[in-house]
Length: 391
Image (cartoon, rainbow, N blue to C red):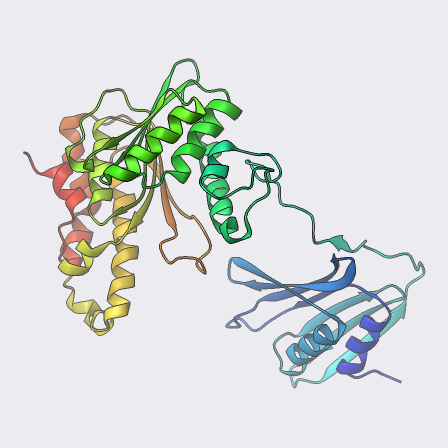
């Protein structure tokens, strides 16, 4: 006797579900595919559900009853036209016809050994700065205990630091290793990432480096310098000053600017271009300028809503800056820095120099790359002005 959809799902779970795949979703569906695997959490077997939404995959963990309920609901609601369910003893296929009628086929497996071993879901993620290994600056900044355990309330910061270092790891081939590297960190603040950069490049990767951190807060700068001395980081110094006014020494190999507010990011990118820095890592913040200037009749139905205009302005500012950096000879990417759930300011601009552009040609290249955007949006951003207008 042929099983119903609900019976097929329930029996597969009771027999020890090993793998489940829901596919063939309607083209406009939010979820294109679902996979289910057994996992071990806290010594107990549960199930991990992978939902494929566009280019992202979302994971949730649940027990048997919830898996049965979710999978049955997806199938009965017409979210998927095909399901493959493999248990320890059987393999089932569920197919839906054009009229929505379901056909369930079941065959016994010849072998009764599990196809997969439940994955240990509690294993620690491998970070560049490892958990359990005490790092002095992380201890003083309250991210780690003296034993190297990550403080629970600071775990997001620990993940953020490691995520940043992963971006740095990717661009190391673009940096020379035969000489001392000069790195500038504009708007360094409490310098979580500045100390992480020095520690990772100098202590872990054995690069010869010199890092200068710049910020406007005198008390923060004094504290960071005190910490640098206590760690013996003799080539890490912090200065009090404005990004726009900083001249400093050349050459500069890497410019870092993390959450520099509004046009401060533009000045940092401008100086990086002028210094012909090999690498730029920038996480913009508070992109107000584009919001103030933007006037576009075609977009008015969207721009009349303040929150929409604010978010559009931030994204357009990031994209505009990326295009300008490309015009200046950089291979540029916009990457997710940390999860959106922690902060909406989560885009990192990473630019690696691929081509040297003569200074007298920079202005024209930038104009050619961006004049259409400027005309359409009615804007004249600071970075554009700095690179195209003579002082």
